[in-house]
Every structure is written in structure tokens, then in C-alpha cells.
Image (cartoon, rainbow, N blue to C red):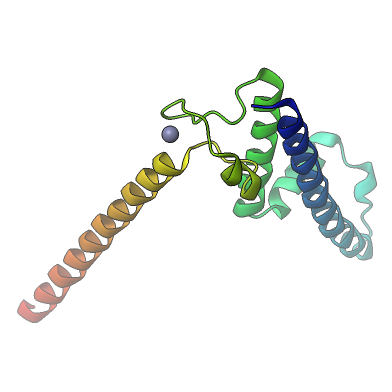
Length: 141
Ligand SMILES: [Zn+2]
């Protein structure tokens, strides 16, 4: 990957991380004001507790996004950025432009989504069969 492209990706990832962390801090501040009304001052919390608080406030999606950004930044550092984790081919620059934290090339991503979809279908069918069995049981009872 070209150095300028890498530098751009790094800048964008850092911007994304900053934006995400700012949102989290805003949420934390609101939580802190709420806590103060209860006579607590969360400024005194040990950092371990604060981390737990952040984890609590972070939704799964935000946490995943933050992790994707962090790991993309560390891939930039170790030189593996822009390489598909599955087939080790280069990820298309346009794709990295749209999603700077992509870890898979387009075809591997499509493959993975197809697998996820068929797994979901399998789960749905199982749930349906369970439902059908329950209905039969109720009829015979
Ligand atoms: Zn691939």
C-alpha cells in the first residue's frame, strides 16, 4: 500500500476513534450528573471501575466499532493493513476508502456473509421445528 494512502487511512481511523470516544464521554458525563444527584461523585472512581462503566454504557455495536478501529490502527503500525485476513490478497482501495477498518477483501466478506445467512436460516428452521413439535404435543395432550 502507498504511504500516502496509509497515512490517510490512519488519519481517518483516528478521527473516527476520536468521534466515537467523544460520544462515549458525553454519555458518561450525563451518567455522572445523574449519579451526583444520588450523592455520588464518579470522578473518584478508580480507572478500573471507570473502564467498567464505559463498557456498560457502550453498546455492543459501539464496542465492536471501537475494536475494529483499534485493530485497524495496529495493523497500520505492523504493516499488515489493507491485506485480507482470509486470502491475503490486497483489499481494494475503494473498499478501504468506504470502510477503513475492513479486514477482508470483497469476495471473502461476501463469502462470510453468505455463511452467516445460511447459519441464520438453519437456526430459524430449528426454531420452527421446535415450535411445530410443541404444537403437536399440545394437540395430543
Ligand atoms: Zn480475501
